[in-house]
Image 1: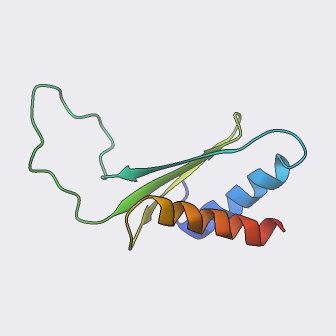
Image 2 (image 1 turned 180 degrees about the vertical axis):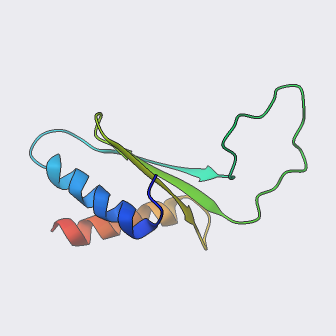
Length: 93
């Protein structure tokens, strides 16, 4: 897992450049609450609320995987996805 968004975007750019002529890259974006272990089925975690909006960004070309956690000022969703796509468009063109 990359420590910051800058390192992740650099690696993502390299991944796209490698797969430019053949292959594909899959980007996954999901809300992340900071848990690293699954929650037990019998106990309830109704009171748990994350203190910050965090997004887990993952990218893979099928062989290599990269990921990072980003603390977002806006909700994890279309805004963060558009930010990543805009960065890629500006660096790859």
